[in-house]
Amino acid sequence: MKKVKKFKYIDWLEGKVVLDTCEFEYNKGEKPIIVKWDDFEENEILKIKEKQKQIFEDNVNELLKNFQDDFLKRLEKSMMKEDLLNDFLKQCFDIMFAPIPNYEIITLKEWNCTFTLEELFEIQRYIKDVVKNGKSYGYDFVHSPNCVNQNKLKIHSYIYAQTIAEYYVWLKHLTESNNSPFYSLEENKDVPNNQTDNILENKEVSKPNPYPNIFVGTNDIAYLLFSAWHQRFINKKSVEANYSFIIRKMIEDNLILRLKHEEYILFLRTFDIDIEKVRNISDCSTTIKTELYNDLKTAIVK
Image (cartoon, rainbow, N blue to C red; front, side, top):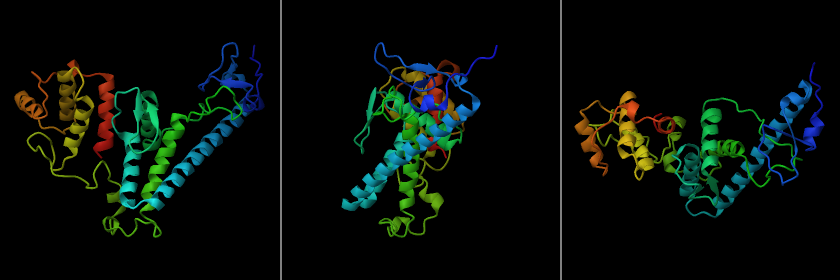
């Protein structure tokens, strides 16, 4: 027997029902009517999805305008405009790509806001999958604007991620406008666009390899990857496993020279890291470490 589709677009729009694809909250004894996509006819589903997309884009545009207005107000009063721009660019970049500190609450240096560990993971996953790799997450997580079971004070991680990505692009494009206060800065004159796109944490594209007897290449890119890993694990337990992993992975990716174990051990001692041996990759690999390594490599090794 064919299941009767009893709900319509208007039920969702008026907040009478809540999709099970959305996060929701309610008081005890006031549980909402929770529905699945199967509870709607196909034409009703299309209406909802179209509205969800519009709500998502409207929220991104509103938040982006707030960010832009705030920056322009600061810029007008700033006596160090170039530094202000660089600070904001770096803050955007760090939100999108920097290693995530292992704290329940993360506070941004330049901006007066905080994230939970889970929120920052979701933001970086969205940036990697949707913004960088062109995948689609859809908009199933978007509530009707009339839903009383959503936390309207909380910005969804995907909305924030999309906004930060667009804000980052907008900040970079400021330097390309003839009316921009940055246009005449010496460092931006006659610089090809592909060079201005290279910002990790320094203005230089790269520096010489500081350890040519360890890292592959003439520049410091491989070293920066190791350094980012070191900053993440410097105070963690399982020292031998953590540093064996980074060495093994960088050897696999032709970023560290193939040397005797003793040479790696001596190198690590220059960073006050003391291990007895470099373990095999099978003895030190975990899913979390692999994902973190891949994210760092994506951000640093262009």
